[in-house]
Length: 139
Length: 144
Image 1 (cartoon, each protein chain N blue to C red):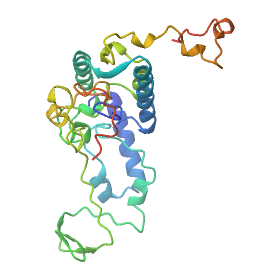
Image 2: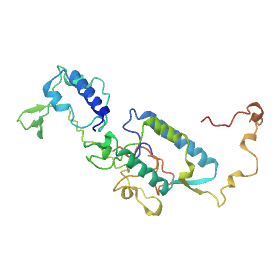
Image 3: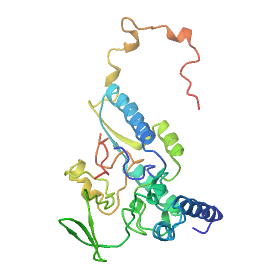
Image 4: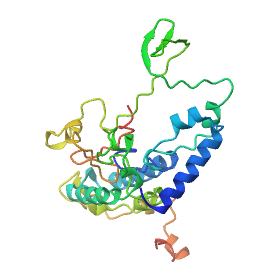
């Protein structure tokens, strides 16, 4: 966090973000994070920041007070009419499948990994022989 | 399992990561299918060692600095459950040579060498080149 490399990455990233957001004070203060570079997954996201400052885009940072039949109502009282409403609520990285999976010694993966998921090289789990399954962590 | 706990998912495109995990699994399956193996299970000791290494390594990374992130399953200071302790080339290299000693085996019969069978090799089957070793005496050394 205090390394010269982190400082350099921070200066570079802030400069890039400011340029791509067209130095819009409202957008830069809403979007430039205060945590270290790399703490969250950096995305190349080509065109994303530029799109936020495009003429036909409006970025709203006010809180949503409720969802009404016509659209989204903000805490400012404004109602934004919408065609589609997409919620991005984050990821659940608990790594076990939605279905109950029981392995050796009567172990259930969701219980075995309740506290912290510990795998072998990210590929396999204790008590689950021959378990090479697909994307258990995306749900 | 693809992209299970502590895979290099903070390290660029996930497609090559999935491809390398697939290679590992397919290569392991070849062994399982041809050597009379019923089940393979990672040993608790290997998992413990790997996770001690992972936990210690990740403490000094940018991922461990204060921010809420899905790498820490939505917490600010929880364990980094999502990431590999190193770069993704490091991860590819790690998977290249399977550490068979980290696995526990259950065999189909009570003799692990049962698959040696009648003493003939599948390399002697009709249509196979059974004198390849005269043509390529250098074959068989791994390029390390």
